[in-house]
Length: 210
Image (cartoon, helix red, strand yellow):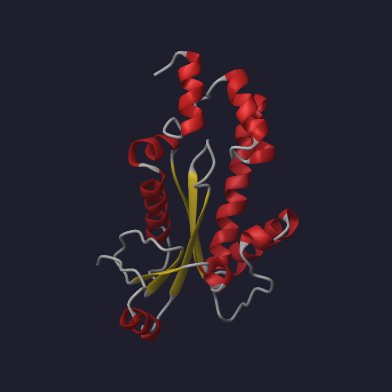
């Protein structure tokens, strides 16, 4: 079944009247110049409530880490998925993000009756889905997904930093900070940089690459 946006009132009513499990979905890493984009899908357990679920961006790193472990321990099921740098460059970042979201939903151990996705765009899924703008601040399952995706990607960036210490990935997480842009100019683009992004294209051009 092709997913639909929630702009039509009848779609919202139909979605919220649908009985069964609800999965929340969110992503991390659309804006960085390097590394994969990550998505998570979470089905929470009503019998095991988790206190303090919020949009991952408003939580401290320590709190996110603690909630990451609690979500994985208490959720009915969850799945974290990626779209690679190569897929980002081939498909574009939006389509790669939707691909990661679809992989996260399809990787769930239990099939949800409906899926609630942060933002205003939906992946194509086999179950009804609804896009909710700022859903990571409104829906606990989406908040949980945002935390899983953020912590998982931050850990990936720590691994990228160990492999490519000259870029400072552990600090800026791949985002185009002045420090990252300066490192790109000084060292050129690495294998984990997204070649379809403007600053990386410029670094490759300066290197004399394609």
